[in-house]
Length: 505
Image (cartoon, rainbow, N blue to C red; front, side):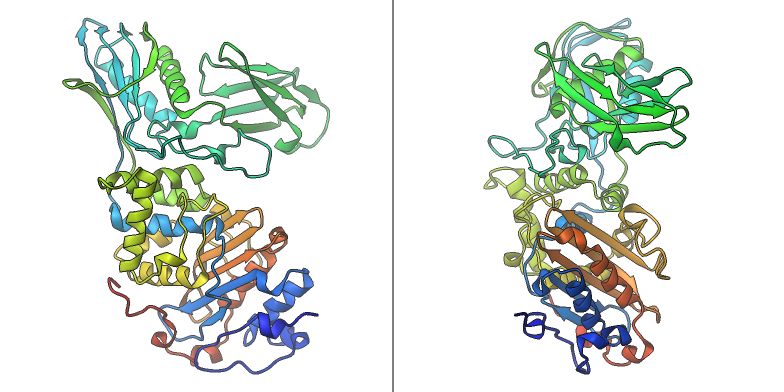
């Protein structure tokens, strides 16, 4: 037997919602939208207690709604909202990462007699193009040949002893790009991009970046189909040989004029960066005669070139629009590295301590939040909709509110929301971060109702059948966006702001 009204509790502030039977919920979707959402859960055979949500008006009148809002749940990638907002305040919107190249030798003609030393800074998005420009600056400096080693210094991050654990996504693909772990020497998101194109006589394939560590075994065939298949029909299977070379075997078929691509993460971050540097240096006509090794920058080394990242605001936008796990994890560790204290065992611990202290100043309860790696790519990360609402309310008042809000996907327009709620009239009306893991679906962010009142919204579903719940979360966003004018007069702005008197607000 089910007891929906006991389990699925609605805490409506100030004015009670008239009692409406579940069968009548569709008749009153605006005034009683929690009941309509409950009905949707039952329709999808999802348990009543799988959903927790909170919706609170920020800049105008409205009737706040809470459903199991204090329940601590796994938020998936909506945890990135907390990390990026904290970074904007703790690091500042103009913060940049600076990757530098040094030498302990001398330049004689076009020869560098000494080591070429790259010092990583944890840059979340040190792309192949930026590395190429960094090396081009060295060639412009007159250096062609390096008679020494390529030395990689990854000491910026102090990682936990034994390294960071690998995340098991239950997908069986250890080479998935979103599983890349953070590292001070991260470059190009640590991925190889395999591209395939159907030609009249064959299927051409190539891989970027070009290195001497990866070889393609192209077994692709050309088909006569009139339609381009999805990339899932093409297989890219990597195998590491004893000599360290990766051979990627490509199978499947592709019609003429069709293009497909796949991304693979094959190497440890340091090995990838070394291979990338050597490959680009060869393309620029240079050579390095020594080995690739890892070490620390020696005293007295001379600075040769620097690559500075885009500012933090740009990075935050990339993280939230497309839910980049590796970039969020790099950012979280950067918070730790920049606020490290002697008692911190590593930068992950430093980041957790720093963000928890900041949360307390913002009126949140750190004891109700488990940050883990800050990206939401975690089975242990936890937060309640109420704590997310407190965070969103503080973000709304922050000097950097515009920067954070603009980083979130626009409903039905871009990022991870570009295909959702397209036919609802909510196009562009909300800035919403999504979250998705096995057993988890979530949304959190800001959306407007028909009277242009902005709402903070958080809704989380935790259940083994969470994959069915996107319609429920979309219903929540649509319901907030279409609240009736009669609701607008129900509650004033100050009536529904939990934590509004928190210090630092």
